[in-house]
Image (cartoon, rainbow, N blue to C red):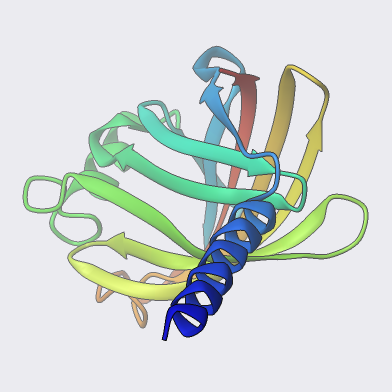
Length: 185
């Protein structure tokens, strides 16, 4: 019995140690907001693309040797800026984001798959307009000892995937890009 208890203890120690090794050299990073950007691009059919940014955002980013260990983000919908106040009011309004009822867009990573040359696939839950949807983003990470850059890109159909209303002349696919300048904590 004593031998079995020792064997069980040894297995648990090995599993715990393996989990620590799998986490790699994880480091927390702070977002340098002055040099970061959350942007989007939509369009009306047969019209020049509509581009904009969200000026107020925050998040948690942890990197390890394999890439992303943790990623969570939050965007304030009312911070939208497309360089046209009338359009921004429409974007914030009931027919699209309905920011009074749904003031934030959030993302929480569920997994990361490292590819080649700092590229990867980030899977997670995007919450927008009261709807949670599993999505996959393409990512690119470059880092030095004290700084890193994380670029995330994706595309969603705001009408089909998130239940937003839109005009008949609006293309419902919206591309977005998150460019984060990061400082190691």
